[in-house]
Structure formats: structure tokens, C-alpha cells
Image 1 (tube, rainbow, N blue to C red):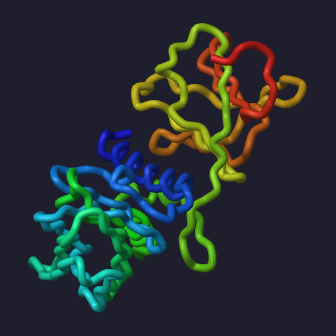
Image 2 (image 1 turned 120 degrees about the horizontal axis):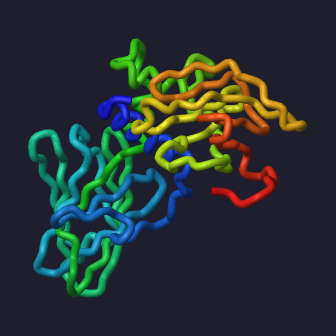
Length: 273
């Protein structure tokens, strides 16, 4: 695959990994849960969670909302010992917070025309957070999934063909099985190994590495009696795609050099490589 295509597929696959592997949202996120960039902490927005903001007497903390949002409500549990102000810079709404005492805490709720932010404010004596921002990966992913056809590129169409399925007129992520192992036979460099193996319950996808341009293997099905049968498959943008799921498959490079592919829960004689 071309470098540009590979980069796009990696980025899109990261979205999938995030969607599948995301843990349940925490009740409260600390600054250590956010990512740091210069003087700011960036939290991944969760609609039902609290986000801690460390503030300090004599300093102002800047809460920057998502560009395009308009504040419709702003309130705090303790309004007597906190100075709270707001302003806009371009299309971005900012809220400025300063405590009037040490060792105090309260909560804050910010409603906008798009969402609600819930903050947990803590007055500290050092290491306050000058700037707080939010990222919205879940919304960006959903927006990408909702984008109407046609595709902007062949790479995006490939992504949808492999990783997505259409249900009730909308695209949703397939449930992919990646639990496979390989067993090497003969002298075979690991640079020739598949970069990825998975199935969607109907088809099996084997992604060959970019470096392997000339030694592509032949795919066989191996039955319970160890008899090999050539499989109907196609090669598309580096993927070997077979219209079936295997109990055991074999990628043959030469008669004496091949890789056996099995589900990881299937026992196999000999050590794995």
C-alpha cells in the first residue's frame, strides 16, 4: 500500500480501537487523566463525568470551551468565595475562575447550546492549572460515520468495506475477531509475516506487510485430516480477503516454507513463533 493510504488506515483503525476498547467513564477525572500541552490540560469530554480543575489564589484559570458553543447557563455551588467571569475570543467561549481562599472546593456547571460541562474546582497552594480545554474524539468519530456517500477517497471506501456494515440505513462497526496465532514452518523471515489477521464472522482478512511486494503467499484451507484445499480469495490494497472463516488456514510461500493460521484458542502441536 502507498504510505498515504497506510497512514489513513492506521488513523481510522485507531478510531475503531478507541471505540471498542474505551472503558466506562469515570465519575471524576483528575488532571493526571488529561493530556498536557504547554500550560494547558486537555480532558477527553465525557457527558456524565466531573473534571477536576486546580486553581490558586492570586491566579486566574482559563476554561476554554469548544469553538462555536454559546454559554446558556453558568453556576457554582459556592459563589461567595470564588470570582467567576466569562468572555469570548472569536468563536470560542472562555470562563475565568479565581478562588478567594485557600483549601476550598466547589462544583461548577456550564450549559452551552451543545452540551453540559461539570467541573470540580479545588483551591491548591501550588501547581495550579492555568488552562483547561476539552477534546471530543467520540463526537468526531460519530461525525465521520454519519458523513454521506460518496467516499472522499479510495482509502475511506476500503475502510468502510472492511470495518463497517450497514444496519437500518446507517453504518456501524463490525464485531471483529482478532484472536489468531501463527505457526512457522521452514526458514521464513518475520518481515514476511502478515501485519494483521482478523475475521468479521463471514470473511477473513489478512494484511500483508508493505515490505512484501514480491513474495506473496498462496492461501489454503486445511481440514481435520490436514488436507489442503486452495481457497478462493482476492487481494485488495494489501489485504488477502477470503469469503470464509477458517478453523485452520495456511499461507504457502514455498512447499517447505509456510505459515499456519489458527484461532488462538485452538491447540496446536509444537511451539509458536
